[in-house]
Image (cartoon, rainbow, N blue to C red; front, side, top):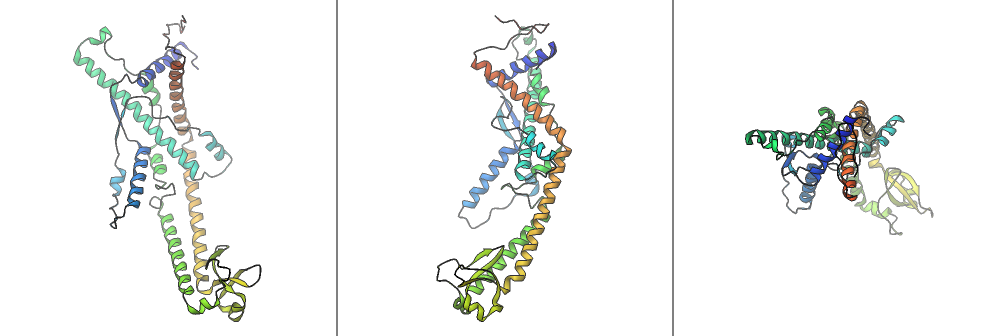
Length: 348
């Protein structure tokens, strides 16, 4: 709410400028680097590659290629904030309770930050438009004295210029996740190593179990009268169903973790995978601990940039209000009032 004559003038000037943009009265395009649009296109490209029947794997882009700014041309209209949520307070409420942010919350903050970058680019495009119009006016002489030249944008670029982005903070958040929304193994190599170790252990354990099940001595001991699966997981341990009487004859074949209700079937973890499974459980625990450490690191970074984030969201909120005033004016078939030097609006 404006509390001064100057504030009233600025408010209605912003509305008038926004109305001009939303009506499409500016015949120009602006160039931006839309991080969100690039992510969506990259994800769609990867999905297409996965569906491809070609055996040859397409070459991965180099790190330098990934860092290149991908440009998009868009009509110079309203700010790119529609269909997005900027409710950041619930996220800070979680932090104020002393909790660590998880993936969804940090992804939300990342999205807000990326949109703030786009809004900043949009504001710079308005400034560039002003410069081009000024150059055009100078080259055309005094046409502006007759009111024939477009007026420059003043309040909207000023609002957008209030957005501040720490490039290191932006890079940390945008590089923190892969295309599937998981913590990036590239950005955090320790996660990549642990994930690789877990995958390898799981693969080796399954391969060992398949080998055991293929043995004739194992097939003779299997309890398959119920038609159930040949393997199952109990408390994180892979087991196979063995007839209780057969297990009693050779208890060295593994560790019993459970039994059927009838008591005829023992669910046995083969001795050959006990050690590897212990190693797997340990690796999974280390992976969870490392992920928790990364979540804390990202949360602490968000805390350090809290004022910056709150200010950016406030700026975007102001722009959203200006757009809302234009839409309401259209709905009511109204017009933007001219405000006198005393801040008085004349209603006829």
